[in-house]
Image (cartoon, rainbow, N blue to C red):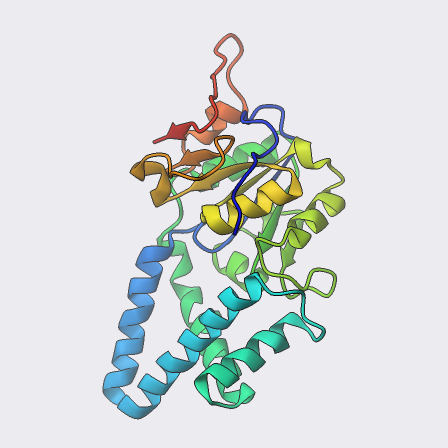
Length: 261
């Protein structure tokens, strides 16, 4: 996957809309995965055959997603294409894959989501809403139940998922982000997209022409080699308000490739 080029503008000021990825961006993914792995291990202890089979199904489903990221948009619906590919990989039926995904990826995590929000995330959403700046979520998976579990659904004007009829493409394909821009009625250069995976969210923003912020571990590991210098890497959300809305007389310079702790 090519990573050449840069996002439009390296600064964050004068944004007319903020668009967010969900998983790994609005909450921290690593502790969630560890807790979910613990639940799966308990399931394996109780019923080794079914538990190991469930792990295989989930692994195939995630792998199918990564394959479809770089594939042409499917002729059938995206969710059916992913289920079909996962069933072929795992040598299981589509119904078996669907049941495992529904339980372990859609239902089981819901009671855990609020435990690991990104630092400063809620304050950023509150300030953005106070300023009357519209916001949207663009996710590779259906997002509304997760936003409700996070108690964040009221902050976003639009919630867009890869499985929506007018999207049907996983990131880094820009279709979902482009739909968000259309619904928010803003130009790409006036929006900022915030995600956690440079190779997925960053490239998606680049292709759509939006400015981009990558939050998470990349920010503390130094600027990743090979990525466009127009991207901004931040460990969490707490310093973003000062970059978005610097106080009068206290302009915050933002250099290309800037990292903020």
